[in-house]
Image 1: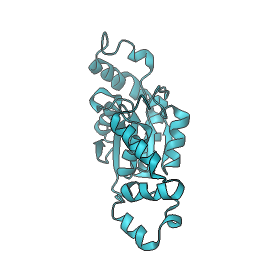
Image 2 (image 1 turned 60 degrees about the horizontal axis):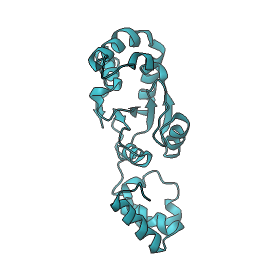
Image 3 (image 1 turned 135 degrees about the vertical axis):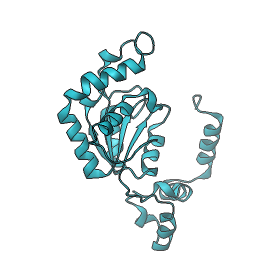
Image 4 (image 1 turned 90 degrees about the vertical axis):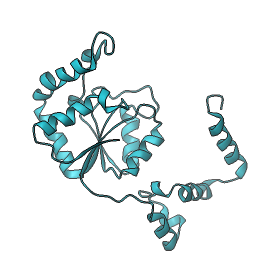
Length: 210
């Protein structure tokens, strides 16, 4: 409790004293956040047909093909998953070279489990990441611009199989998210990756950084 913000602490204390548990708590959460019920597998157990129809008004069912890119910096695993669901993303492609994280829920095993349980496909393509040896000194001796130029010129041309795998996933799932750490795509190689594929004219679907 000491690590919580005062506002979060207040909400938890109110919840504790409310007496809400089990299905009643889930129903309250669903009614207050209907946009995140789109992939729930227990709606029919909790609500009747008319109530479900009301919840559906908040669902994003957009199936327009899109390649999204997103970083989890500054997000909890819950807020990250909510973001993916809000954009109706069907598959997540982890483009970290080494998918380990000090942030809870974002190391490969737990991360993939959360993604799959939220109804999305998880795929890790480490070959499209930047090896840690190339990132050494980043922000000090190594400039982002130089790093991404080296990534584009020296690494990506030699990763034909990995690129074809990514393009196959885009074609299959239509709405996918390329995931890495940095919140700002300008400081992440995922931006260089999509720009490279666009320049090569192999990525024709629109790209959105979220």
